[in-house]
Image: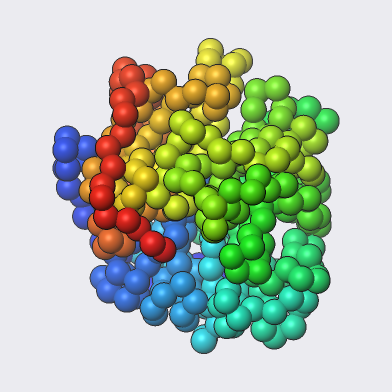
Length: 380
């Protein structure tokens, strides 16, 4: 068992912007890294918030560490930075966490040597590897990393793999109840496909689901998944590559993430080519079916972060509120134990990974309006 060790003293700065309280969770340089990106957040059964990210020495495939902070007061204050794994000059990427029925927290991520452009297939030194760490005490200590690469990555042709990034889910209904789904995408670069890695034995062993068939309009890349009220699963993916549009892609699985309908454009969800977050907030048995979704609601730039609400399993999104008007990139959602929605998001050109909490009553009181966009195109 690896005990989580603090890297340096953290600092949670709170500010009010456009009437919303924003808390900076990870701050580059201040938290010991020149850059910090790629947020993941979960709420444990005890109500603790665990926030994960990549502590970077540079870009996507620099000497990146996997880091974490904890909050025991619904995100008002945060612990010091904790290093969960560092492997020298190798790069650790794509944190994706999930809370299991037992209360165990499972974290999946990748390790690479050369980055996505130069990665090889197979399981040699130049390929991508996938690791899992778990915690049974609300993130206070963690297991040693366990290599599950051959269980979640196809051996031939596939080069890079990426978990999410964001969160995994545990199915609540149907014959696959209890199955863990970890949303994944695979390379080669510029020929991405999305699929689920899944486990039916609480994360002990893993299996590789089918890739979602393409629609000829670009590729699905970074992906998240949500269980629908009838037991089906919907994926929601970043659109990227030749022929893509500035919209999210979705697909449906009728067999617990093993296979998928063809990807199709969701015209209601515009996107500047970015990661996004989707979360089941409540089931019909809790009064209403509610799914929430966050992304930069722009066709041209990573800005105008919006939280949307669907009552009809993601068919329409009649309610929305602005999370943060300025620079808004990757995000992750969690339901807090005080019935608010926690949003962990990258802001203002990756100046910080920040947290805010939005009440369900606020979201349900605002009908959707057409999101604004900018003329400045985001290219990566």
